[in-house]
Length: 137
Image (cartoon, rainbow, N blue to C red):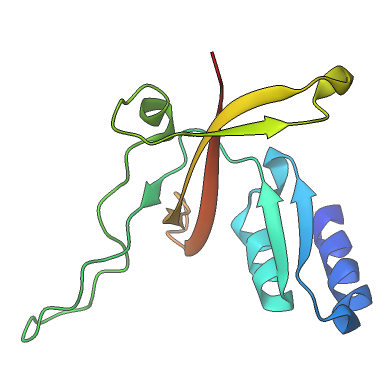
């Protein structure tokens, strides 16, 4: 088990009686399916920085009555994060951070959503909530 996995297990065990949501915040190396699985199993929320080219999808379309075969696990691919940064159709909300680096106030723009994240090598699925942040100019 990795150090991050051990921290997650310890965090879940020591905060079990708090009756509140518990979050573990990490950098991009924490954005793995194995760590996310441990977090979900133990009721810990994971906040990580994902790659900008992560494969994110819409929810699958509703089941079609009479259609044979397995139901799809995912829908169409969402607009990539890199393209979202410049797409005029995206709705951005201004957010102000009061204590930015150096104690300054900083205004950024955010957009967010819920998607299905797919592991490229193993094909595993995970529901995630994502936030995309860009500098406000």
